[in-house]
Image 1 (cartoon, helix red, strand yellow):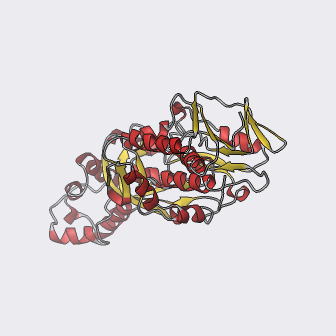
Image 2 (cartoon, one colour):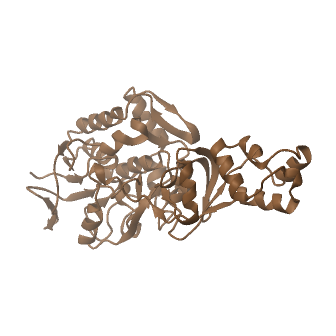
Image 3 (cartoon, one colour):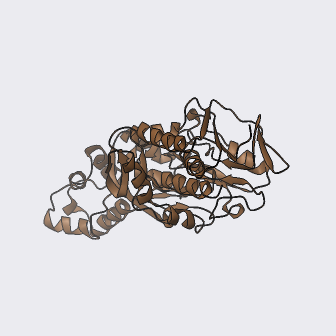
Length: 385
């Protein structure tokens, strides 16, 4: 069969692209390897799909070219996607930090995308494991099907149990496109050495400010049996490099000098009791023990209290790794943006070849940003096909 466009991947970006192109009168085929489309959508947001973020802005995306995402994001905004959600009667709610979720199930988002594809007579073929793509006489051949346009929307290798692979990168390289080295992002970090003792706090969480490099996030951090997780850690993991420290402010609401003031106000209090006012019991006990400040704070010199306060405001962990693609929500890196048009997502040197979504070197923060990039990049390509 000959189509106007073949889209490899029936995830968020691929379905959005197909719907837009199909409704413009293009004959579109979507090839999805899994038995059903949108599998990553279905597991997102605890099954309720954190489908966008009201705070979407280009500075909340990582890329070798921080300006690349501006065009697509400006032309298809969270409000645009929300209009679509509301047009389909899907109830939604806002959680913290601009995150929007379905009231019901993530399946509503997949059903909405498939309904939009149906409006454009898009053919969605599941169980299609593409291994080879040909390109002759201006046509891309995928098995017995061909089209003058091919869209790479197969995502990255994060969450391999869902069938994710690095196929997008292999295909891009086959057509001569450069790939920015991919690595796991939005991923828990593991601890070793002296820090391994913090694993005993598995299950304990607290609101902190976590920092890596110049990036800082105030959200919950969670101690696990392998190391550190929780939203704050997942966020900084995208900025962390092996060998670098992660700094945690365990008491972000305490002003400088609070321990000295506490010594004056309550000299017979112990540090553990002071910490317990703001932190879970087990965490307070561990930190107090590590700081070595035993006894009443009134008996401790001011210098020791200043040192303890500084450590609590900038506790340094040096992770020995991450939990890898198996636990990573997304992939950093991907098909180099220098190879693509920021307006259409078409490869500059291979007419008719497009790349969208997670396959591209554009990675958002945790909290719906990566879905918004999927929608926006999918629309950019769909409107250009």
